[in-house]
Length: 289
Image: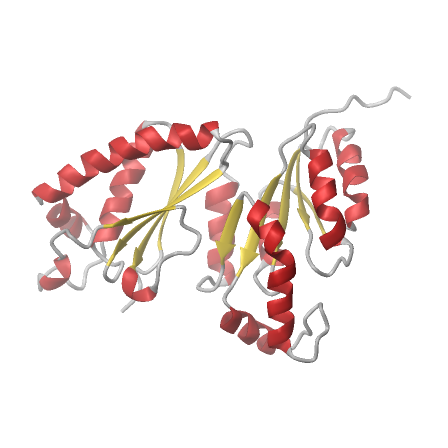
C-alpha cells in the first residue's frame, strides 16, 4: 500500500485554569470542523500530530491540555519548541477570576485537579504553575463574565472564521463602570464624546440603534476622533501582522458601555471590513442596566 504523503496541519492548543471553560471552547472548535482531543498526554502530542499529517481528512486539530496531565508542566515547553521548528501552533489560554472559579467549582461539586483540601490554595498554586504557559500564549481569554453560550460565540467569531495564516481582530465595546476587558490588547476611551445617556429620548436605546448612532456620529469630535483612530490602527495592524500576532483585541470604552462605545466599535468594524480584515465585534455591556 502506498504511504500517504504528509500535509500541513493547523494546530491549536487550548489550555488554562481548571474551571475556565476549556472543555466548552474545545467543543466549539469541534463544531467548527477541527479534529479535537482532550487531555492528551504531552509525550504523545508529537506522534499524534505526525499521524494527523498522514491523514488527508484532517487539516485542523485542537488539543486540550491542562494541569490534569501531570507531565504537562514539565514537558509542554519542550514539545512546543520542537513543533515550532516545522509549524506555527497557536496557544489559547483561558482564565477567570478566583471568585468566579470558586463559584463554578462549588456549582459543579467537582474537586480541583491539584487535589488540595483548600480550593483557594489549589487555584492559586495552579495559576502560579501555569504562568509561564500563559506568558507564551498567543491569546488570553478571561471568561469571568462569559456564560457557556457567550464563550462558544466568542470562540466561533474570533477564531473559527479566520484563515490559519491570517490575523483575527476583535472589537469589544464596554463600560468602565463594569471594569476593562482583560483580554484587550489596545484600549481606547471615548468618554470625552457627548453622552446620549443625558438625552431623554436616547437614554433607553442601545448604541446599535439608528437614533443613537446618528446622535454620536453627528458630533464633530466623533468624526475627527474616528479619522485619527482609523489612521493609527491602519498603521499598527500591519506591524502586528509582521510580528506574527494571530489575534488582536481592541477595547472601546465609555461610562456604561451602552451608547458611545458600541457606536464607535461598529464604525471601526465597517472601516476594517473595507480593508478586507477578518473582524468581529462584541458589545459586552449593552444589556447592562
